[in-house]
Image (cartoon, rainbow, N blue to C red; front, side, top):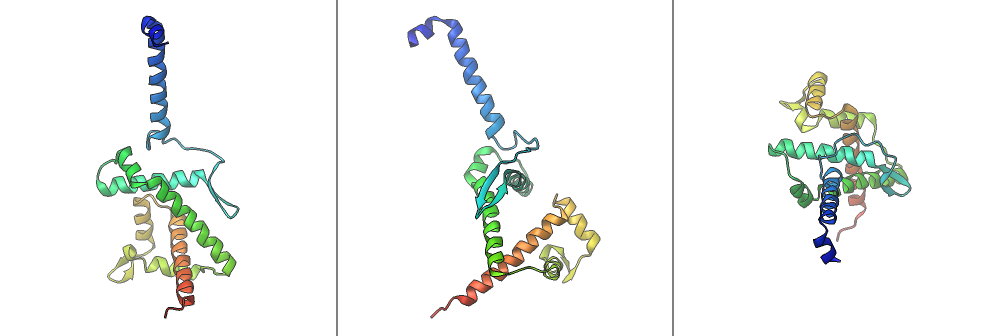
Length: 177
């Protein structure tokens, strides 16, 4: 078989064309940042107790994390570094953990009120100036400069408060001798 391919120049060029096409396809679909177009997909990244985590949420959060790492390091991280960091797995685990916490809170009847969210925002360290909240306009400006929507930030504050409540409930229920 290899003898035939060596003798036939046309088969050799077709083989190289196939190899090149596969390599290009892999670059376009598997290298982070190469396929930044908005993905409109109905598939789910994971399912937790019947609740789905949309693939679009995973992609959005992954893109935000890449932007964060690139901004904090001052350079664009290469795909090998992103793979070594296990960033995609970290993002998925974070989304799954958030769902699990929400499920547990629902089952235990634990809620985070609007007042608790507001208190969390006002006491957030990056939003403090000499121990006081920086104000609504500066708050909006800081979020906008970091490409974070107000709704997304408030959702994160709500999840942090929920996490804190769950941890305190579980810690209080442990009997340590």
